Amino acid sequence: MPLMTTSRGPAHWLETNAVPGAPAVVLIHGLGGDAGFWAAELPALAAHYHVLAVDLRGSGRTPGGPAPFSTEDLALDVLAILDQAGIDTAHVVGFSMGGTVAQAIAVAAPERLRSLVLAATFASTSTQARLFLQAVGAVYGSGGSPAQVYALVLPWLFSDGFLSSPAAAPYLEFQEDPNDQQTCGDWLRLLQAMLAFDGRADLPRIATPTLVISGDEDRLAPLDGAHTLVAGLPHATLSVVPGGHLMNVESPHRFVDVLTTFFAGVDAAVELRPANRA
Image (cartoon, rainbow, N blue to C red; front, side, top):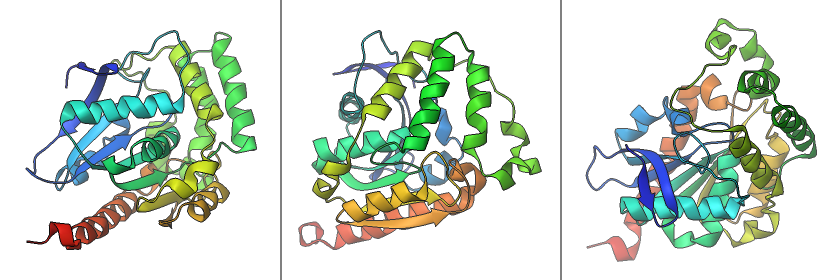
């Protein structure tokens, strides 16, 4: 899809709508990612849902800018994309940093959510992850290259078992993406927005049916953070998937199965509500 203009400015997203009238699913990537992060999940989801995978501000093909912004600003950007796409309600899926954006959407516009999925994420960045990411940001901001940043982050993305297996080979080297227009400044502003986010006090306000997904060996968004989310959210369940931070890469079929099973349950409950009966 070409760059579009929303009420919040230019934005890019991928959209598939092969099933007329199907519920919508909005996919929100993490720091350093873009809509392409969801390439493995898109075919399975597109078979049953109207899917939008967004490029957040300063990510992929969506322009950034010199001014700082907050996670709440990113949430409003995504809501403007939904408006532009003509989508009233959606299952909102946020991965890592995208999970903080998804939480902010649930607080700002709960009526727009059919359900909420928080994968490999947190209500507030852990101290360990904060110290690590601040150090990475210092390297990048001092002239480090994207390849150097990737090399620093790589050990934190996957479990040790995966990294030592042949399946990890495609991920061990930095791959330049010709469609990615993200600058160092964009990455650093996204990092600062994520580190400044603390949604713990707002968790009780999120009444949306929620699924929290955590990798059992995730070091960037550890399982303790997932338990904090589940304890604070009124209607949340936890699914633990084998793998590190990118457990969707390590356990792709399990990840998609967990998502689609949850969506199906929520959609069935929606159809059973009195207002939806003939």
